[in-house]
Length: 86
Image (cartoon, rainbow, N blue to C red):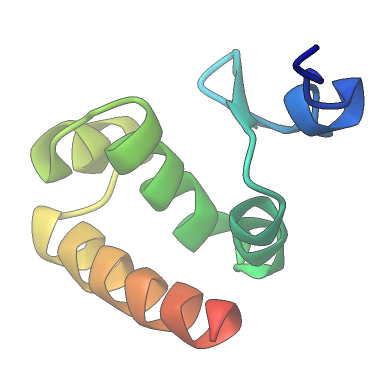
């Protein structure tokens, strides 16, 4: 008989992030931990961009920022995430 994978492999612990009144689940533990360690503004920008599929312009409007500021924070956040995940 073929053994199925353990339930713990299938149902790994998810971390939920609150953004724009929604709970965004992040299944990967390393990514969720790295996101958690980002400053709040940077974490929000990454969540809006990659998990809610928002443009920099839409994020800027929601957060009352100029688009270039969003672009800077997004690029800096990705650099920080890369460093945290190494």
